[in-house]
Length: 66
Image 1: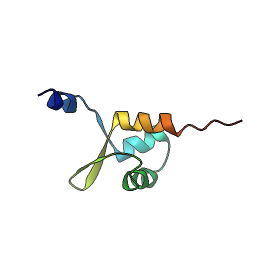
Image 2: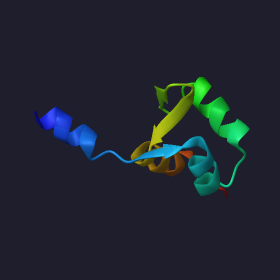
Image 3: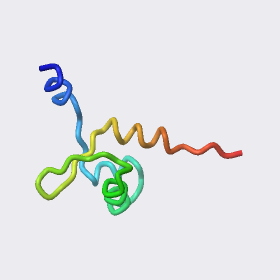
């Protein structure tokens, strides 16, 4: 039961919304999804990405410049 509750609290974003947040093209988001870098759920013919996955991806993608 708690697993269902956790899933109900997940906010899913469309590819267009993810692209807007990341300031990249939709094609870039599709590449990240198909490459396994960004987890997504397929709903019919479209993808939905958990919002927290986008934030985690961005946090781990920062590079330290000298």
